[in-house]
Length: 451
Image (cartoon, helix red, strand yellow):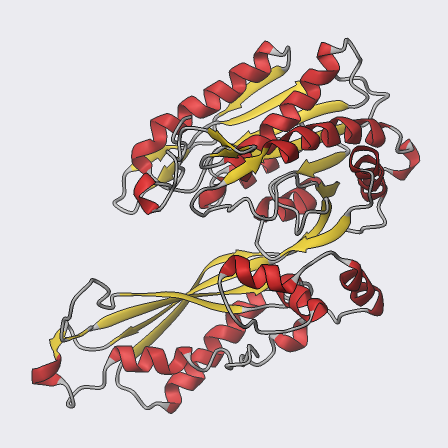
């Protein structure tokens, strides 16, 4: 398996080979394939590095049929054996019906399952019920550099005849199959407090200077209460209210709180009933503090007063929040809290990511087709779920191409995405491929007038 880690610039040759391999696989199936050059990325040291090309492919161009576009990515998060993996993360290993390897679930198996879905029709000498296009990228795990511009550039060419977009870069919530209709966005902030011109010795200067770290921790503590209430004025007021219908949907979802607690290894959660927990996972914003740059974090002791420290925190966006407004609310609030400290140090707040949430209409024919395909393959109705994380490309597709999107996961709830021992079960992979085959057929039955 290629070490297609998009965050590591030294692995970039692997990533280029990964894209070539995906393109070659689609070419051999008879697809019309292109490797689209999306330019270069600038590294922090000023050097530039070629971005992995985006693979586009087309199977069928019958204008009387619907055209679906499947999005996926073949880059992965970093992984090392010494991180605690039981097997080599870059050598796919089959143990007890599970396929272990980095990227197995996120997102290589779903991409391959879609490719196999097209191959299955070919192998049976059956005409594809819809035209199928693929967009496969290699930078999703680091922010999809260059992809937005490529989608915009090809809006009136490659994407011009696309009716529907399908994304399978997500997972089920339980053992019940799911269809995903929403994701949260993400506003990521840096808050930098700077004081003396250099780091100081706490024995010599402790007690005489107003320390940047104390200021920073003080203002971070005003973002969220111990019970999880966001304290920044205006944020909670902007959130779309929970409707009775939505409450009922959450009530019907299969979700076990105890197994969820066991899976993450905690004795207590922020909320102790299913509806509150799911709502705060999917449709309410949250503040998470991720780290402090410039602070002493190595093992051992060091009596240092850091001269400059930068906190990194994020706020997950939900409908009806606007990232531009959140940026202003957070910046104004932190500056007002900081001013009350009457500190000589300086505060600088910047927002480095402003990704919007995505929400689909579950009554749309795409979701009706999804329910029918799940029923056919699994013999049950799917759970309709949202995703707490962010898939920015969904919002880009919605805003730029203005076509309907469905997220159709096949990954298991216990696949360990981004974690050690990531896996995809053989069951999910094989049944998931059948689901995709059935889904293409169901989409072909959607009446043209509903487009």
